Image (cartoon, rainbow over all chains, first blue to last red):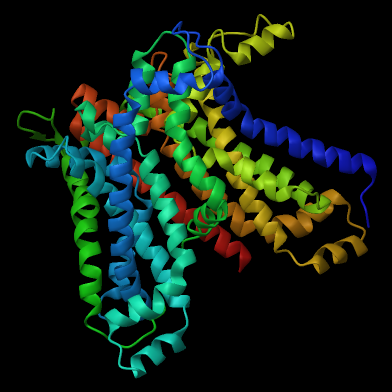
Length: 268
Length: 292
């Protein structure tokens, strides 16, 4: 059964219109970033990225962002695998209550904890350090990661675990040699989500960091956009530099992003 | 909660310990401290003064804060109501039509979700600028009188910020609803058609009840996003002009780190958290009850 021609044309028009609406602002910024510099530096095309990189100090910002993102991803995924494994496959007193404690962290907005975090870390002399940016984000990601890995380990094959146990494998070996290898898709989803959240985070570095060498990419861009007022071209180029890493990962692993953000949202 | 599977194992505590330590120190403890701080009047430097619940009373009594929560309500219309309405229409038409290229469409409309909000804000600030693309278009079609600096306008700044929210949430909601509609068994459509239902009747009788769960998720996600609009406001308007785009999450930052009203900021943060918990639980409860 085929729909009438007019209806089919209408449907494609709808697709195109909403596709353009979604892409419009992104294309706008790409076009501006590649045009002749309206700030008068004489650069154009890809030269704008070099110029913005130099004027906006994006090299330093990206270095900080990479360091923070990689640390937060590695530590929080590791901790989440361990805790998700315990919640998903073991029985111990208080497991239910403890798990609910972790669920609180998924819903909690950063705005609620940023104020005490800042003043308490200041007392400890830890503000304006790498730790002040990374550790609170590890805590947030561990909340989601525990929830995510628990769901995976609960659904993974019981017989696999039983067989490993009969072979005399302890819980540690069972986890790393039996359960983790087939968990790759779930782990990749967790890794890309945590990477995206950490890379894009703004409030925590904004509050915690004062020295320029610790500014993350989005924070650096916000400062650049406040200070650089001669034209839009180089600002657009800077924005493209900051946005591109996550978009590149999305281009290759988009199913993980969509699945993770939608299924992750369907928390009990 | 149903009892977890597996053998009883005390070693479970050891596996949870590292996660719990970081989580407790950097999330749970600060939350408790936020409640504590919210009971004081403190400028962040000198000794604080215990004031009981008066910071919370201010959330209701202080005109500026009431306005901020009011602005958040307006943003909810743009972040949540509009995307759900548009997403429902879009997804149900596309689902009926079985058009080609739907996979690519999904990828494209979801893209705004993964871009850093600061980048989004820089782009839209340019679009809304007095000599930006939006005004160029308006002038080109002869609507010179409508053209203005959108983000500097007392009336239009808040809706302008809201439209950015509509822009990045519509894709998320549409993709979510498309997934839900794809799970509806074909027989239900056929049964409705045998009963002589047209497109609209079919939508209300078949589609809408089937995607109730997805709508609940969409509403929860987008309302929380609306309540947590910080980056966008910080970069596009800084709450201005005047206080016409100040929102609660911006007030938390503004009061704690710019005005030295730490207790009040903590109280707003606690209120936001409670609001988000109530909304999340409430919406899911509603969805559960109506499917039962």
